[in-house]
Image (cartoon, one colour):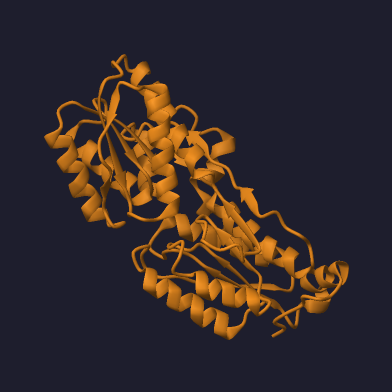
Length: 326
């Protein structure tokens, strides 16, 4: 398998990557996700794999640890991948620091590394594709306030924040944006200290249940990923508190989408994981072809509610796995 085509002129390299002349000697792009137990990350893989199916001469290999809590395992996967020497790497690094040595080693060896979703603490990356998570958090806060107003509720009381993990920059940004948004849109609401659940659904359920039962003045909950969103939805549905407490969550797992349809979750901040995977591989191919890439690409986020979830613009975002090419 051909490993590196850096150094060829851009036109020649791109022809090799995408043309039939390269079909027998494919370019391998390794895609490493944060967790295999999540629909969100499976959507990233669908996007990456679809790119390979649409572009002759490009192959995609995929890997990742079972859970986002398995940071050491993800580092080991990356180190093994760099040693194997693919043409390029796309990675969503759970840790902003732990994967840096291996990423820098890959870049030093001429392997372009495109990071997606979470920014790592090094400038030695080819490009970074991600949601503007601070903006996404502010969107969640604004939508929560609008939902409270629409329900005729006063903008006072407590709001809980259930975060998947501590110390992850993506989540830090979302939570910071949400806090900024509440201060701007409803300064009389009181944001409670964040509760962390180590990306575990059972812990998320127990945490949400504790918050709901022990805080009679709780008017809102922000859940900053799919695991926490699913946990909150389960508790609100079982306790019948879905109208008393406005819940807004990130992502679009099937459980979250069903909760949105049922009105248990009032809104979802939906990213584009499919686009991250597709554009991530495309960025590696362009880098191999000699194209200069932007340091950062905003992959976008949207607010989806029960009222607009059937609109065509949001269907692919809510069901990215349905876009898989057979």
